[in-house]
Image (cartoon, rainbow, N blue to C red; front, side, top):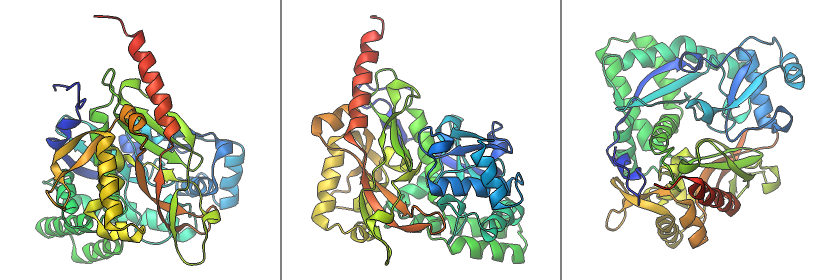
Length: 414
């Protein structure tokens, strides 16, 4: 693959075809996972730093893996640090919110034509979820039901065919999704193809009805399919010598960090922000945990907050008017290396989405990328309390740019 010195390979995202292959237990695609080994969202974090929702999700994961019989027993294992925590980014994974992935977590597996693979947890559905920190009996039993019934039904529906995630994302952008906070159109397209495949492959009607009803209750069901596809695109341009392109943005409720193509797997971090909040009734900004999750991988490839003009619903929910949206779109063009020729915004001229955040352009323009995000209460018993728009701190781009200059100096002359 030819790598341009101006776009650093980002231009090849237009031609990439990323497909959903199957749902698997996470340990099947990540053998490093064990009964007490877990992946988490964001840059590395120590057990003693865990925010409440992440600690609570780990309690749920220990219960799911039958390493504890009660939440209090699981909590004692956490207190003893009798488990191993690793960033999902080290293992081709991206997880929403807490991002906790255990050996038994059902995950969406995506691949591209070059053989790259990435995975992300299958959505648990609407309501209380492990990703928000819930570990009650209903949450754990629902995951076990997904493994026992939903997983084989979904895989049966797509047996003998493939689901092109890239095409769904392209279409969803034209039908009201920005493909991070809103995945309604994408979910609908997925469900249509799921039903067609299930009927074609003779999935038993009662099982099909139960699984379809469960998926259809979650309008954002397709979100983690998009995350897995975005991770593959980001990985395809990672490791290009001298490249200033951001290939990861992730947060863990304590810190937010970025990785840069030309700087390997090094994280550049700062305190995670809260940002602009739109909260459910009865909550205030003091209740909000700083941002968390790997879902901002969507912004890395030009979706989410970089594609806000695609979703008037999301923009309006965030309190933005048309002038705000247009200005933000122009700002994002100034800090990215190219515009897509494939993924277009439904606005005047149908411009391509801005892609390839460049740390040097961020600094030159003094404009930081924003991310769309769900917001979680500090108390894990409460869960999601709203949504927001958060800036990635300028300091992480400054640190990365300085490291890039140093790395370039240290490279031998040719």
